[in-house]
Every structure is written in C-alpha cells, then in structure tokens.
Image (cartoon, rainbow, N blue to C red; front, side):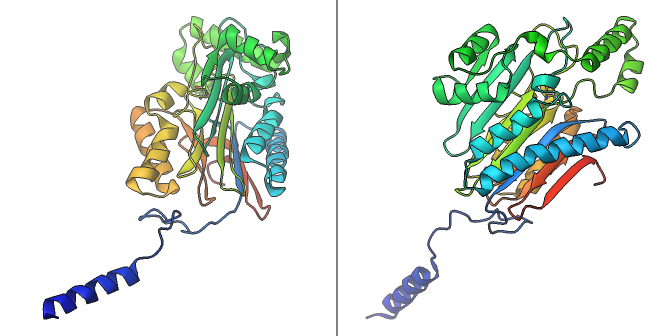
Length: 351
Ligand code: ASP
C-alpha cells in the first residue's frame, strides 16, 4: 500500500465519521433564535395595525380589545393543546374575532364608498401548500370558513363576489342578510371621511383619521405535528371603491404558510403588501437567505415596506415555534400564547 493510498483511506474514514444524519430542522445559519423547537405548539393573532396610541384609545376600549383578543386566542390554544390541528385552531380563533364588532372583519367589517360591506379572507395550510380565499363577499357570516371550504372542497384557490357567496351557501355555511354587517360606528366613520374627502380636506383627513384604511384580523398557529396554518379576514379599507380588493385574500401577500419555513398573516395598506409580496417574501428569505424569522420579518416590514411607504405589520410563527409580531405603525392589536399557556396581549409599540 502506497503512502498516498493510506492518506486516502484516512481521509475517507474521517469524512464518514464526521458526517451526521441530515437534520431537517437545521437552524438558519445567521439565526439569533433558539435553534431547537422552542414551542411544540403556539398561536399568535392580530386585530389590525394602525395609529393606536394611548392618547386615542380609551381605557375602556383598551380593555375590551384585550379581553376579546384573549378570548379568541384561548379558543385556538385549547384546540392545539388537545392535539387538534392548526387549521381548526386558526379557523375557530378567527370566528371569535369575526363575530365581534370590535375588529374590521365579519360583523365589524368597514363600509365601502357605496355604504355596503365587502369582505375578503384567505387561509393556507403549510403542510401541503394548499390555499383557499374569497374576495368581495357580502352574505357569508364567517369569511374565513368560506376560504377554508374553497381550499378543501373546490379545485380553485380564489373565488369572488356572487359566485363565492353562492359557493358558501352550497357548502352549508351560515348565510346572513347583508344588514347583519351594519354597524352605526363604521357608518358614521365612513360618512365623516367622505365629507372631508368631498371637501378635499385630504390633509385633515389623514391627520384626523390616519388609520381609516386599516383593521383586519389574522391568526397563525403551529400544532403538535409541526403543521403551520395562517389565515386572514377583513372588511378591507373604509371608503373603498370599484370592488377594490386588498392583500388579505392574496396568497403570498396577506397570507402564507409553509411547514419548512413559517406562517404569516399581514395587516396594513394592502396595495403595498401586494406589491411587496410580504408574506411570501418573509418565507422566501428564511428559505433562500437562511435567515431567522425575526430577521426576515424586520427586513420586510421595517425596511422594504417602509421604503415603499407601506404602513402595517405582520404576525408569524416559524417551524421551531418562534413567534414574531412586527409592525411599522404606532400600534397593532395582537396576542400570543406559547405551549406553557403564557398569554401576551399588546396594542402599542412599547409593550
Ligand atoms: N390589509 C387590509 C386591506 O388592505 C386592510 C387592513 O389590514 O387593515 O384590505
């Protein structure tokens, strides 16, 4: 045996010994987060990003919002804790928010310019990249369930308008008269905005009602099987015209989920979220740039969106169960629970 052969044998042996079994959970190389499963299951929600500050939110509204967020997230957490799926957790959690007039989704959907309510919603299953969405619907009590039916019981991803209403009815979902979505508060809000707009008092409009565009609810969850689901539901933007549709029902903008990376639900000025493909960009940065969820979310929300002048935020969970809530507005209604049952609720930037 030559000396060369001896070296080759030693080299091969050392290489083989140092090769470990491929770890599918290998953390992102620049991750600043725990590279192991931090939460076997977890859930996070938002109730819209906007101009919430302690000056413009009364203590009564503050506590109403926090208790509704807590009620909603507790529903999803219980499902996950009992071994249920993230799909069920997201859908049932969003129902609580959609059934409350406090948020811009379902019952609390804001008004269009024509004084109607048109809602959008989407859901995505990170296990197989299945997705479903509805846009411009007017009679479905819980839009998130319609999105799930589209995903599970139709060959399509996105249905709109009358056809989507009809599909939901055929699927046995609860149908309501459009008057169900009428709320005095939202109508007053629309009329004030239209008056200012008609008088071309745009500066005053933006100053007095800086977040008339915002609202929306969303939920992301990871279950005990590592399946990630993301869902988003909205009434869109107050005073929207011409059947405008925002980012919420757009897979990749308002919602995205992939078990290999993360799940994301967005809230903010939809036109910018569509242009920046926000939810997918965060997932793609984790996949291709190998950065952590935190880094990806900060990059997209605090840099890319800000450069475009796009206001809003996101909630997200990665495959390790890390939770991220990132926004570039003064506030965002939000809450999370980890597997230990520790609840966090937040409204303002500094909490
Ligand atoms: N993103 C929603 C839209 O543009 C609005 C919101 O999040 O408040 O329709």
